[in-house]
Length: 212
Image (cartoon, rainbow, N blue to C red; front, side, top):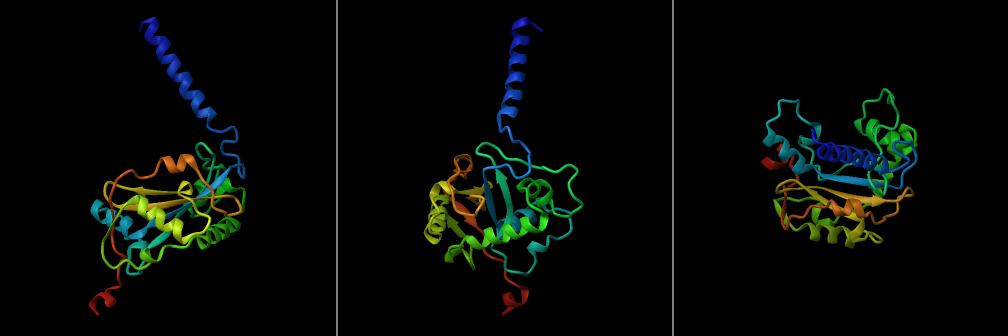
């Protein structure tokens, strides 16, 4: 390897190491973070995508007959840049993936963390148009954000981001302070879906209701 190439590789490695360390000096210390992200998954998109993958796994309880719409996907401590995860090693012997990866970073006990998740979900009002979607709906990400902003006083466009796959609305992420007030979050907002149009599959109907 030439000296020039060796120097370039070394600089790249040093830069990568610096970038990792520069993310946040508090990395993975329980309770030391800046805000939360509440991720609300559009359940019909999740289940439709799972069907397309033709997974051999056992059926997901979320994808049965119950008419799930927006459901809590996660409630994640965040830094202004990046995020902590797996803050307690080894993690407590609990079945919750969300607790192992994210909840341990909140600094709260498991029961208290899930209590806060429920309170955070209760803070957010789902726009009426998305409560009981009976047919596929084509939407623009900006229109979804506007609908949430209109339904939730104090929520700004800078505090919400729509996530998507190649054609479906996948989830809505909303940023909150530790005391569950809406707040802007530049990094989360920058990662929002940039597609012009998305599909929201309809809420699933119970089989008995479908026959009626």
